[in-house]
Length: 605
Ligand SMILES: [Cu+2]
Image 1 (cartoon, helix red, strand yellow):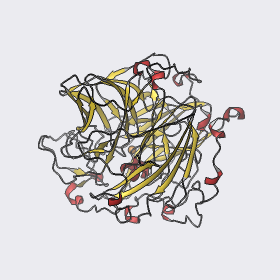
Image 2 (cartoon, protein in one colour):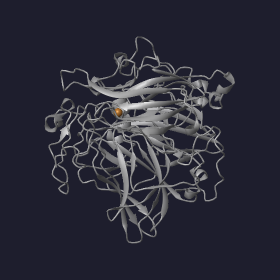
Image 3 (cartoon, rainbow, N blue to C red):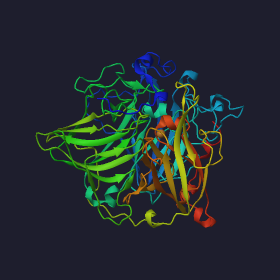
Image 4 (cartoon, rainbow, N blue to C red):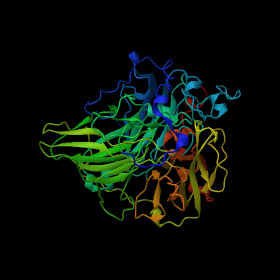
């Protein structure tokens, strides 16, 4: 089964040499598992629905704590809990609602250098940051493995501290609860968004450990009546360290080439679609471990029609979802991508895009209609293998959840309104009809920190063409790109590396115009998009072209764009953009910017 993939020798070491050289450094100071408040279900469990926390009278007030503990397998797990002890609750708000979220860091002390990624800026290791103490959580200070913050992925809320800032916000153990307070914009498309930590250098560890949750902007049935009245499920697929890293592949799999692993100890894509994955998956925290992938269980009534709202909250794993009945792929009715209904442009009515598989990069969301198996039938939610490139991780074919059918299956706890009012028309013209003020070109690239040493650390870059490639510097506020609010731009994103990257930018959605140099007819929006890898055989690098939307006043400020494979982001593949206010000062006032920030949380802790 040699797929003939040119292996990137510089990135790769033989597996068995390394399996015994990767002791776990994170356990000593993590919370004791016996006191662990974040228990996870057993493999093969019925999938629990995350607890819904709904806004009332236009406000959702949530107290969250983030915890960390070592599990018996030697991994570090992270979890969010609300005041009632619910893990990673789903935050449900309507457009215009106010979210007040107090986050308390209960992660214990920082770990020492063994757990610190190689690429961390030296200043970030210094707890006192050259004497500059962090007083209010809004001054970048001792960002380390015990500090955290939140990013509200996909929402167009301002990139300022206490709203959706990840550059200056750092919450340490011992700090009093840090208040996030912002309004969901009136014009935020209804759909599935999410929250997760975004501390540069430590995002991967926290997200891989399970720190993530869903945020739903209500009203998708108002955008598309095809989903009105449907029961809805929130399915969060996360990745995690392998529970059985030393196990051979299941005997049911074809014979494989020798397993290869990369610098991080992850299995490299072997091109077969099988073999040891880089990471295990879980679905709503039910693990589906290698090598046998015992599926989690979804109960449905025969033929029941449901809306599945699926988030790929993986740190590095790509998904390619399908639902099989007797091995036959079923039609999945895609209605929204990355929180935005497909018919956001209002030109295509109650549109449903029926597909047999849905690719979902890390960070992305798909919302789709599923028709359950008939009485007596069964179904299987799977991910097909993703060819991440010769330098990418191994994301093989595997089961995720079995669909079991019975007439008395419990309904999901949430159901969409059967008689929705239609959404108001968008305030702005369709993005695809706007004229870009300019076109920029950016590229992803990788190189060894010591080109002569194939075992040296890999450095990850995203570079504006013409600038000198540089790792993201968390202490610089010099933007790589300056844009003007009120405009739209076209960005061409190239991939000059041998693995996939997932482009993401904060504060906005964009439109995919071209893929591999060819126009795509996609009247949709996204916030996270795959960029194909370089095979080294084509005359030009693979690229995508995006229409970027800086029209909303909430995009004014400095924020980031990056690869959403979090080890790449942590390793430097991130850049800064500053969006300047439009010349007409009247256009930059916004409801969100006027939100009062509770001074008790800015006056020093
Ligand atoms: Cu990447």
